[in-house]
Structure formats: structure tokens, C-alpha cells
Image 1 (cartoon, one colour):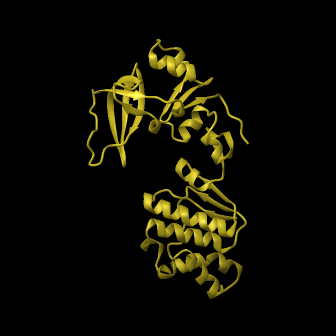
Image 2: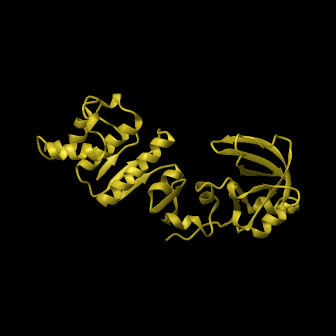
Image 3: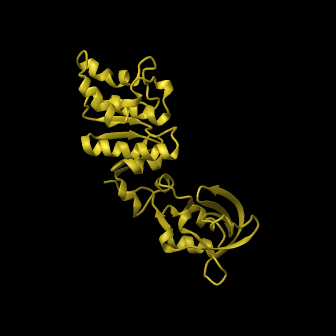
Length: 269
């Protein structure tokens, strides 16, 4: 089994070539130069071969760790938090590299992560743990449709998760009644990007903007509608104009496609 710990655990006193060659040295001494060169070339490390880990960027160190783990031709690769501490560009490049290596080598990859984006970008199947208990085992695509639990809804990125008990225990209002009618046994989840701001001529629910949270491609608006705080992901017009201000009254459109009913548990497969 090849293993890449979260810290990478590269040997600081060895060069890139020395780190990558270590599993080969365990097999035979010295390792074949052609085999080492092939590994370095595959991960774009030849020009870095003489550098020490301290002289490398985070993404470069990750590539060294992958090359070292695969040098012994393992039948399984275990990776703990593979894309942590990398910027978005490095994460994307490394995920693409790892995916291509996995497809070419056909080595099963077991990833341990707290990051849903990593899980969805790398995994065909997911085992999700909640407080040490397995709550889901199945294909990654199975979470894209069908019933969810509150834990699963939060895991895959639903910002608005409302328990049914909270709905049933609150005073009647247009929004509460609309949500309760469509709620599952444990509540309902609404995707922030599926909620839209509309003008007064369009049916919807009126509320007051409480808070604005900037995002790379827009803002998250927290809008108080009938006492329920809804998160609406809003794209700004080119140039950043058209952003509402706290205290402003806004109308939110909720569509059937924006909601997911919640159950106490889901069937794994």
C-alpha cells in the first residue's frame, strides 16, 4: 500500500530524486536510473531533482509525495487530506494530475478528507462518517438527486437546512406554510444558488436583507423572510454594480427545483 500522509513526510535531508528513489532502494540497491528518470518525468520533477523539500512549493512537494508513493508500484494508494494547504489553481492542477495517474495506473485510491470539493472531484464512491458513524456508502452521483439527511445536505453544500420540527413549531406564515408543505420527515434543504432575487411583479417571498458576505463571483445575501434567514447566492452585474444594501426589502423566488426533502436516514448502495 502506498501512503501519503497529510504532512507529506518528505525526507528533508534528501533531494527530490532521493525522496522518489527511496522505495526503489528498499527493493534493490542502487535503483535503475531509467526507472527513477521515468518517475521524475511523469510528475514534471526532472528539473527539480536536486532540490530539497524546503526549496519547493506546496504543489511541488505534493507531486514528490505522489511519485514516491507510486515508486513501489502499490496495489492501493491511501492519501490523507490530499489537497489541503494549496491554492485553488494548485488544487485543480493536482487533482487533474492525480486523476490521470489513477486512470493510467488503475490503482484504487482511498482518500480521507473533510473537504466535499475534494471528495466530489476525486471519488467514484463515498463513505461518509458523522461522529464516527457511517451514514452513507454509495456512488458519488447518488447524492445529486433524491432524498438527503440534514448531515448529507450540509456536506454537499446546501446553505439553507431547516428542520421539520422548527417549521412545525413556528407561527404560520406564507414561507413557513410553503416549506412545510414540501418538507420531508426531517425537514427541507434549499440551495443558495437556486434562490433568485426578482422584482415585485414576480411571485415570491418578501424579506429584509440582514447581511452581505462577498464571494469570488458574487455575494451571499442573508435575507430575513417571515423570521427565517435564507441565504441567497447573488451574482453581481459586470463592474460590481447592483449590489443591494443591508436593510433593503427584497423579493426572493423559490422554485421546486431549489429544494430537497430531508429524511432521518437514506439508503446506501
